[in-house]
Image (cartoon, rainbow, N blue to C red):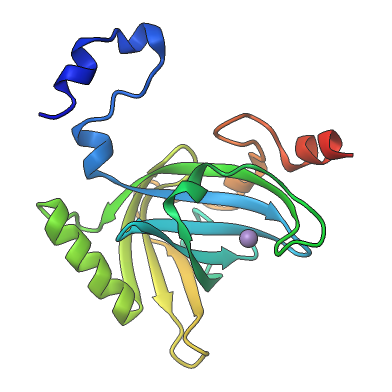
Length: 194
Ligand code: MN
């Protein structure tokens, strides 16, 4: 394994450096960024084929299966974007504060037996506009559907929680307004910027 030399030289617990390795390499990542642009929204992003497939969710994700959250597909973002947190300056596209509201890994649902098959399956689901995914984040967990609305312009989707043990009534999840990376809120960033 190519990282064994890297790990052999280090006490990663003491140094705090990334361990790398099978789990992080094999798992696809997701991130939800809370973004105070001209309209507040949540950017829901799924790693696939080396980019972040992206949707803007005006009302934010919900763990309540009775909610159908509009999710507008936007342009792919670079993978690096998943850790972006800060203030996009006035005069720039999407000007405003951004925090990493949630992050974690995801699979297709039910999970394919290998990464290669999972990626093929997710590509096909994305193309069809009918994704079934399982999230393992700090705030969002369990099975979700992301479904294109065919009557629309092809960019409008719905994000819906499946009924499973991770489902919850109401919107308590959105009351946690802190970044999972830094603990900061949008307001913290605003205060610091002014
Ligand atoms: Mn945005």
